[in-house]
Image 1 (tube, helix red, strand yellow):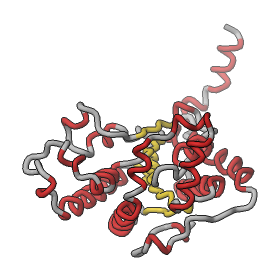
Image 2 (cartoon, one colour):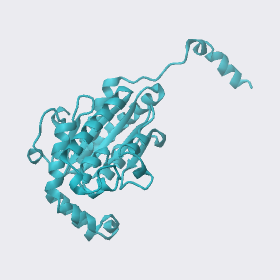
Image 3 (cartoon, one colour):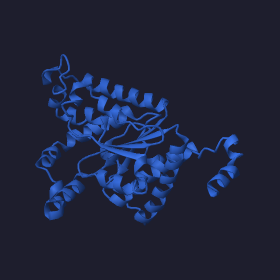
Image 4 (tube, helix red, strand yellow):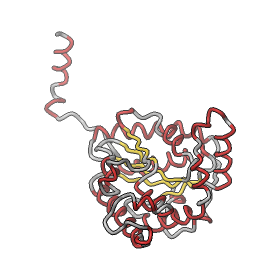
Length: 282
């Protein structure tokens, strides 16, 4: 999985968007079962949590990836948060507040479908989003400087370091989709009646800013991939392959922790037969 990890500066246009792996769907079944077993042990141990951050352009496959990779999880062990435009309540707090509130408790997974990085991504392409935050001194677009986004990226790295130091394993994935593949997937939404509900005219508006978004993603990858919370760039043009790669990344990271089911305290273990007899003869 090292080849997908961002260890040095990248040029996003030079990164692959398509990898086709043999028997990806069959292999995923085995991998996700292993991840589910690890989650059970992690839950029982109660010391760590996992935050999976998924970023990608529209139609990059985030929703279906979540459905397929975490299909074997006990629903009590995972929460998925899809971050849309901030609500009125969320706008009363700083831009990271709603992400703090969605962090996983010990023993559990949280998946961020779109993440805190939207605050240096879509808000950078559409600065009116920052103005809506009602921050003192930022009432017009002219008052928003490039330094604001540099400071925010630094804050996000600090945020990730903080939660990592307190037991949260942070896994950040950028689903790298090609513009041609996005076109095909948008057309599919329009051509297949059962998929029409997924389409929004705003998708085309965002697509016109493709190059701007790619520049922002490149900036994010190069400035926020750290030892404690590195980015993984996963080719997303072939969905079965991208799902398998993400599952393998998650598994390879979690296996390093060697989570174990806790044992009964010796005083209880010594009384097991007595407990059995009590139940059998009640």
